[in-house]
Image 1: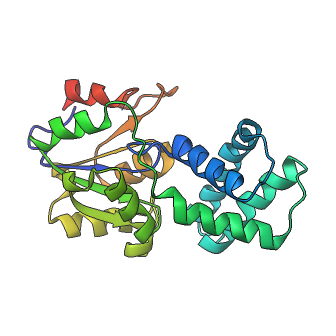
Image 2 (image 1 turned 90 degrees about the horizontal axis):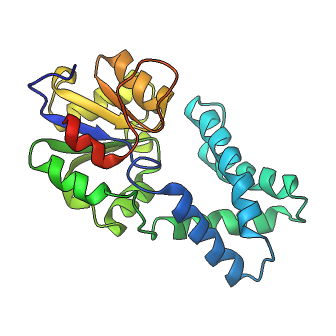
Length: 226
């Protein structure tokens, strides 16, 4: 049961509001066409999606740094698909991917309408494990920056979800308290368990999991519970 005195809602960004998979596919297509790289995009994305999630898990758990994340997720995809590559090519794609990804603007269905609704009732914020400049640019490019009073990134705070300290940093920045706040995100570990361990309620965005947790499968469903 959500508290009646809820004042602040904290959203994850990638995979929650900002459609990471769609924007990634568009970005890779631009890069491959620009450099004449002959890769079947559907096959590439089919491998890239789980590989990317694996490397983000490693990054979140401080097992690799951002530079290795960006390089090795691409190297593993190329190796898996048996596509000839070298360090120079992978470095080129990795750099152009980061430079172009944040220009993409696709949000999940009903994201803007839902934010419009929630902004009339609550103060809205972002907590993301993404990189400072990239995440701010994504928010601005997709024209949702005006909804959020604060944006907390892992790079900016020095901590990654599910570490309690990133939530503490975000709430301090927003000048609010966990008892009046709510986290919404797509990661059961980083967003949901991380927030709950900090003492903040959370709503999972995704398909119904096989255990008891507050969840919505569509962003517009937030209007019925908030």
